[in-house]
Length: 182
Image (cartoon, rainbow, N blue to C red):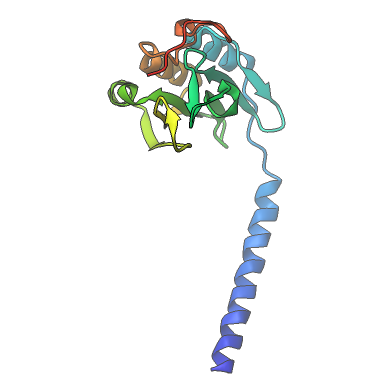
């Protein structure tokens, strides 16, 4: 029994060493940066300027739900504390295409229409879940994902959310009075 444990331990250590070597090599590989024309295409599609984080080579546009007033057990919760969505774009390692990922904040009755719109625009849904208990109105989070040309991805993503409150042009300014509570 002890011999078997020693063999398994040695195998585990060798495996861990291999993982560390792979991690060291891949840590040196950098994702190609987003180009200005890629970021401009995202801005044009969404009608809102995003922010580029050079160290991560990621371009992100915040999509807060300023139209909502959320409470948890009767206490008001500010939108920045969990009800602000986003969409991010990043080049693939070969630089030939891009990936889009988003975390969208939805009311219960907004989930199915966005599923249909995402599928109609060839975007994948990788998760639908919640973050909180006892919130009112009930909030769901949908992760959308896609790959392809940055400008095309931005257009497809914008088309998918265009009829929703996620689309920047459909959002009231932060702190606006016209709050939707469900």
